[in-house]
Length: 70
Image 1 (cartoon, helix red, strand yellow):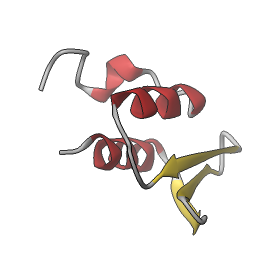
Image 2 (tube, rainbow, N blue to C red; image 1 turned 90 degrees about the vertical axis):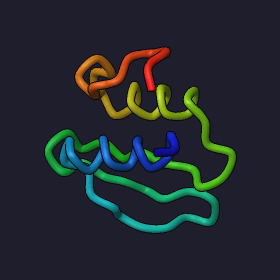
Image 3 (cartoon, rainbow, N blue to C red; image 1 turned 30 degrees about the vertical axis):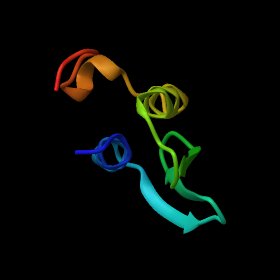
């Protein structure tokens, strides 16, 4: 699975909901945490995934994969 799809799945499993499409990003919102996170649609890589999960306050260790694993 590519990093963008993994990120979206992790966000949605944590309670984020799709809010809207931006011009280059999709916007996800968490109602309890009151956090809005943009997820870009193009040129998405592991660094973007790590940054978004940090902004969403999701512990990367709980996502099931660790750096270097496939």
